[in-house]
View 1: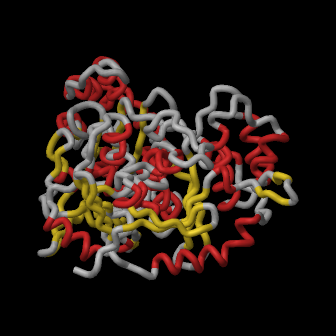
View 2 (view 1 turned 180 degrees about the vertical axis):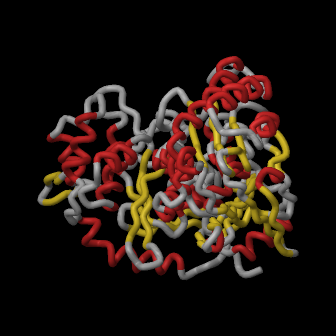
Length: 486
């Protein structure tokens, strides 16, 4: 194996920063939030929840894409381990305003917030400003829907949001700023940082942090450190540290493995790399898979989707993960890889139980293969529309033959210890006419097919009621399509 890098390098405040963990005594899993707040001049970033729920810790990561265009992404700094920003530009609230002739000149985003009364107590304001800044750098005259989506990850108890929305709509007009002027310089600096493709290996104070830069290296490290926690976006694993205060002894961070970040489209299917962020998937598919697009629209927040990956969401095998029931309905397959080769299996067979999968210690999730089914439907029940975990979610597939059910999949999350299909209900409906009478009768089977638990989100009886009502909702919403199919 080639020489290993023991430091992390990135751009902050317009300058290259090198963090030597041994000298500076930082834990390799220190979050970007806590790293920034360790300095007196970066207190603008705030910790509100330490789990990606409030957006007060929002910062912006910037780097050029394959075409050389700078991409600015608003992310939750409480969920990012410091080595994950290696080779990137980190932008904080302190970097937006400029000093000229002993005067402070606010960035246009900041000025719009001032002019339109978008701030009151100010605790959440830095995170909100950073979200609008990333929006302003990415869109010219965005629609209100795009603006609202960009701000769903920022909570504010004071302003009622309307002044914030007005400020975002006012400022997102594509006007250049001092970041635009320095982009060529920043790109050259980042290119210099990334010219060294050495894998990162940090071992300090009972922790080992490994960041391979290639799939080959990742598989080699995994074969030697099979007991490591494998992460990519870390939006789930980070909570072990930030909320449960657990020490993660060994981490293999796949966020720099570019071979896992791809979309390959064929006539009858699309293959999505396990390391591609959910926001990138949402953007690249551009609504082509309608149900998948609808699911991603209500998946957490944009800040989390910029980090979270499809492979990571599947790998957690959560019973309330949003992607799994829908992918069951799509009849998706998963491709696994190790040093000896690869294997592909049905996603349903990959999930074995509560947070249990068929992944071998030497394997990584390589990709997910999604057939281009048309008759797919998704719905999520949660206490709030955005940035919330499912109480019950459903992914349904239906194909008819002369008005009768030829093929049906009714997959649910939140109804058992793992995402699960209602196979008794499916069997009852198969071969029957797809009409309200049969659907109503099937609802009786569905209500008794699961034994969900009661927890903080809902009672078991509500979940049963919600599941059967989702079947009726599916029937009602697809009446026109069913009529056409006949």
